[in-house]
Length: 259
Length: 282
Image (spheres, rainbow over the protein chains, first blue to last red):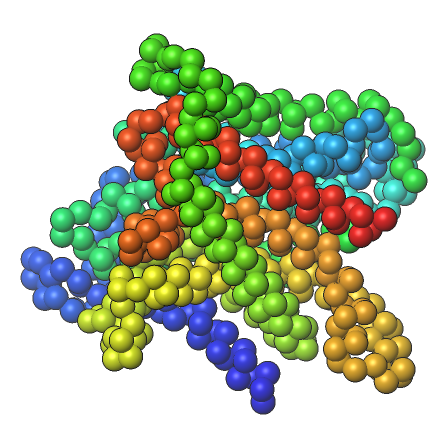
């Protein structure tokens, strides 16, 4: 009985702010042409989808998160494999060094990154945000993938090598299918840190290429249509929900690190 | 024992190149800026350690540092025990546990700048679901420091509880059932089982939680700024709120020096933590 009550209290705590947002997203909070204030309906969602800037923001977010996750996994896989399967000079220092990047607060690096990316022509482009998010996502991806690769018996490598598979063929045909849940979990954590990040998203999108977070920010004006803001927020949750659904059975395994 | 082979460094090369460009270069630049007065990028003057001396000599810096450390301590003090408790309850829920994990992970995918908005909407005295009730008991987050702190801490707990639960659950669910059965035969109490079997098993995951949550809570910006812009009267003026003001005011040299100091503080805490963890393992 206590357990059920505790779980209900937890569900209430988590869902209450979201319930409020969902409720508002279906309510006309400003009123307007032919729609009275307080009317219940899909008008906010239709308005969001009819606004080109908001549609572009969704596309921008999708592009940079996709680029970031792909880049992180592609670069983290060989690094995680090296750390899981070999010992070499400075291997423990490498793990500590990448930790430094995960713990560096984004706001510390915001100014030089803006200057550097302005030189490289990467400001106002989703590619810039995708690259800079590797700073904190790559260490997380390496940690997760390393623990998954370590859990795969070494015989997998040996059998593949005996069969003549080396290099990329081994990675694609043997290793990646064996640690598919790990790749899913690593992608999930990269996704959640990248999709919702604000500091770099703000400084790297001065005039264009704005992601969802900044598009929502820009909706706050003298007379904010809070219903529309909440509709945009609810839409921004959908890819995250899909990710949680896909990795639900493996989500807890991602960080079973060596204690 | 894995084979010793220094050629493995080649596999790390892409990660190192990427982190070098987006991490090492900007970090070196920040350190360099910290010793300069910057008017424009073409008009830069060497000032030595002047900014550092000025910041370290200001009472406001130490007050903000104290607030940030207190905030991180409270965040960890609330989140870690609560997360472990939720994970322990979920562990007894069988196939429902996965739904519980999905539920607590939900706030992790909410855009960070929308979290203050969601909570402010919830406690709005006119339209919020909780607002009228809170107003009836005299809660006004702009009124006292306690109220603002309580709101930011609640919001942070809501946002990050999922991470702690997922990691603690990962550790707890990896314990072989035989361990608990043996403890039950020996007549071990619930507390003894937790202390001697479960806690050592989740120590690795908790270490990650401590590091990630310390760093992120120490550098809290969006929530503190979104709720009360550092108020009321500086009560939630954390370190990053000051840094944000300097960047907005184009005091780049001073902002860089402040950023270097924050980075060093975080690094010292993390380093001490890693050393302590290694000593415990040894």
